Length: 299
Image (cartoon, rainbow, N blue to C red; front, side, top):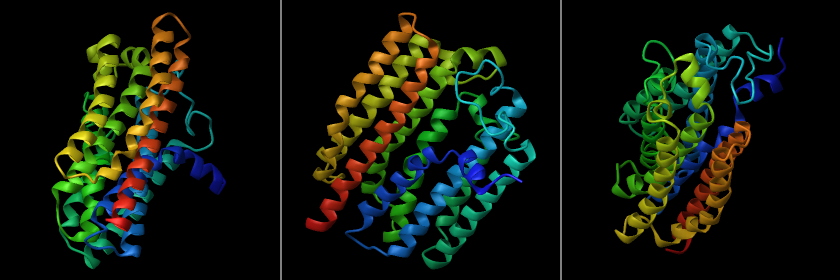
């Protein structure tokens, strides 16, 4: 029987901040109007459980389809390492979705049943991202799904839990986080482009080709910063949230990695691109949340 530590590691906990930070941002943008600590915690936990479920189901279906087999540049998953069986991984994913859904029901009962639409859509998107029958990530829809559900859906849902309103402010705050989450996926797909093409996985990077996919990666990053500045200029995002602009220097290591691989360096260096994109999302998101928290505290 696998240890609890093995189950936890298989859920890819390093990715959890991609769900927790947007949920925190949504909570903070709504906090000046209303704040309840326990519903805020449940919203964050529910978002993380849905992401964990997505990770497990993704690993299961990628294994079934052969896209995580020999030749993949990323680290092997729990199935490839023999830590968990495919059935155990799928069961873990379904259990995480069930736990997240249970939290969603509690929030619906405590706040509003309008949340059922957001939670239900998030659950379906998480499963169908690679799951049967749609396999959205295999149809070049991965970035769109990640943007929508790791940006507007999570942020606006968490804000609604507090303020019981769908607001333009929450939507504006969600945009940069959605773009950065999509950039993480694009970094992953850039790394896996050749292998995905070989196994028939049609990501947007495979369709566009490497140079255009790199351009898309930079467009997503530019959109994150421009949407933040635009939201602040429009009066929808509090000015202290512009602290997130302090992360601009962290774009440089990613540019160096892409240049090195383009010049002939080992493609496994693109694992650093994925790491740096995830760290950018975390740093940007935490500084954004700090700015929102300062606005809440000091107006």
